Length: 452
Image 1 (cartoon, helix red, strand yellow):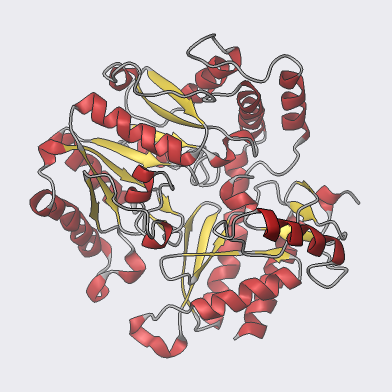
Image 2: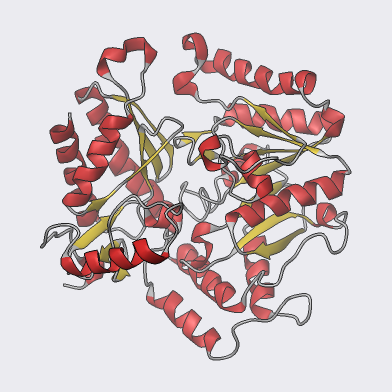
């Protein structure tokens, strides 16, 4: 059986002797500030499975934190990279026209979920770069200095995106921070104050946004409102459609650009190519979308999509960069996009979600430690609380830590998320087989049982 079709199998103690040797080298040369969750070494990977140097096989439900939606080592992507590498690796777009950049930009523009037509695409290398460039585009296009972001947000680790990121564990000692970034409360419905739900909860969170105009920045000075369709590090918290629609109306009223950070939510994960497709289908599309992570099957690439009318107002020379739209990365991205469209990866995500959510919700009824199950498509989170917490919904990161550690020992790679570290995220490659998914769910539940 090929690795691509394999099931989890742990043959040695973890880490095994060969992995230990690599980890010792890591400790000597890699800064400790680049932390690691597992003492795990990847030797090779295919589909949703990875193998370590000692022959242990793991099912990966993290996928490089949302990078491997199309799966590891997809032959079509590998061949596209090999073919482009034989022609040329790099050409700075400011100097010579790179056909792969143009081809990918044209292809992703056809699938654009943003407001306006025609659209244009700028490419960069990382999610943080895409988010920072989206802010620069919004500021330049509107002539306004300020932006609004949200509690629970994660947008990157550059100086600006670190400021935009809510969790300050990611920016300890990094100040002073850029000015002009203001924060509103994100609609975390499970933890809405006073038990608010439905329309009352949406109204509460819309009001909290509008309070920023009174307490921090008048709307005429706000260039953009930036949000994640599903918060990643914030705990896999989906933005309610009714709330997005209301925020769209606020932006229209005040001439503010609405930016969806789709770095983690894009490329079929949500059951659409972009989560923002849901907004477009509903008649309230965003103005700007940023993307990265899964776009190029593991190679560095990111981008910003918005209407040409917006891009045309951006000051020349303020966006761009040496490696932006690297030819090899763009070739990989073209192959990823074609595979996702040909094989209907959004439908794969919805099928996976149906299977997992049925199981997760059954666990919620069975285990009082599970407080909430939520997600959009195959971007799902299970939130754990202390049973004695009752209505307080006291976070239980200790239990999550036990489950994650136990799962690794059985061949399942999980990762926590959330402001309190009490959510287990699901970001498994969307090419996972039915047998692999079932095996992962069985391991996960067994680890819940033994960790309680």
